[in-house]
Image 1 (tube, helix red, strand yellow):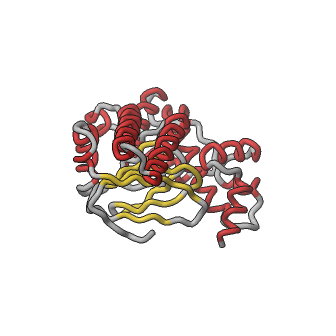
Image 2 (cartoon, rainbow, N blue to C red; image 1 turned 180 degrees about the vertical axis):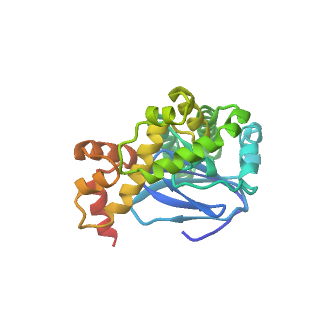
Image 3 (cartoon, rainbow, N blue to C red; image 1 turned 90 degrees about the vertical axis):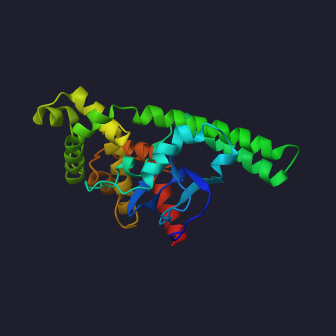
Length: 268
């Protein structure tokens, strides 16, 4: 899907697989449970190289709810302005204000969007009102997830930015190694609790979940090489238990590594 823009608001939910979203001159990998909002008139694109399933919902905010601008307006205005010049890392979700839903919330949103689609197709009595009501519920779920994910003290977040950027670089450079975040924090003369707090405030994810996400995203690239054994793929991203790697991959992507590789092969 090449670069495009539109005059409506759009949100996208990834339900299975993975893709790359291009927005504001940088790219972010998306996995199941990720939700992101695209403001009107802003260019964006998808790079789809592997099997992926996603839901797109397009709407005009002024036609749905009075609280829309209060909950999302500031976030969307931030997306429309240039970011700072700090480094961008492949799993730096905060750059596109990506919201990661829990498995339970993602399933709820998917179920509601299925109902909305059915209403759109069948167009029964008051179908437009039904769609609007479900959309309002979905946006409330997303709003709550966003508040929980990015709840932080902005001043504190600014002061700790250098620490988080350095830790992201450390993760990138040592992805195939065993990483102990308590040891990392101690080495940098901060408590492990403080490190976890500022890392989550900046990225929206705890350090371990961020690391696992990045490992799985990197593993997707390796799995495109059909000759590379899955155990070697796991080891290349720092996971030396192939069974654990398979469970983790399925948890993030929705397929086992072998199923994912077979689907990639079928689409070539």
